[in-house]
Image (cartoon, rainbow, N blue to C red; front, side, top):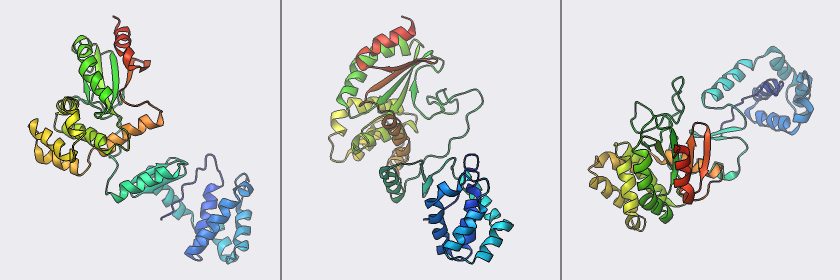
Length: 329
């Protein structure tokens, strides 16, 4: 475990000097850093609200048995200030904006999380997975929902969509390819809506993923759709997964079946297999799942319908009526 300091001076004015106190203690032995670390955290109420807490830190140094002359000289001279600034810059460069902030290899855990968040990050790190690259800042005047001209058929947020980018109504569908109810909606309800609204340029359908996080086969299917998307075949795989739901969802080796589907669609088999085997799209799928979990979404299919800043959740049985209302029909 590597500990990096990131004091938030705007709300804790003495935090930087407290960090320097810990670094000054470390100059007398690495174990003494942790002794001062514990002393500072156990007594924040005593020093955090003071206008000048240096005398308090010097008293702590005496209480824990440091060479007080050396400690006082270090703290008064700002000897540790450069080290502190370097740690602040390091933390900021690695995504820290608030505390507590943890990195498990390159997986961030931000805020006061329960143990499951750390377990998830550790499991991903042990599996050799990496988070998606830090998004490139959006061009001025666009949002993550806008069509990305450098990747046709995808938004700036990386979500596949069908329909005209300028369509006034946007429908989000959170999908679970293994859900019988989701299949029913896609096969029995959506085709008429597709023809009436999407093909007419009134609606754009945007896809996000919401398989149960612990349903490995369903998660794998979402990864397959995203891997196919990298080969310009997201919707072909999307349709095929719902059409053959009973086959792949019950297969003893679903990964092999999904690779067969890629061959059936005449995709680059090696590229698709590499994408699947390396879990290259898993982070995107998990990001979508996290959105659902954080917002308490029900099980897929989940639909949201928006027109500009208006709209929200639409129950499946009311989806046609809601879309008609927003489309002005």
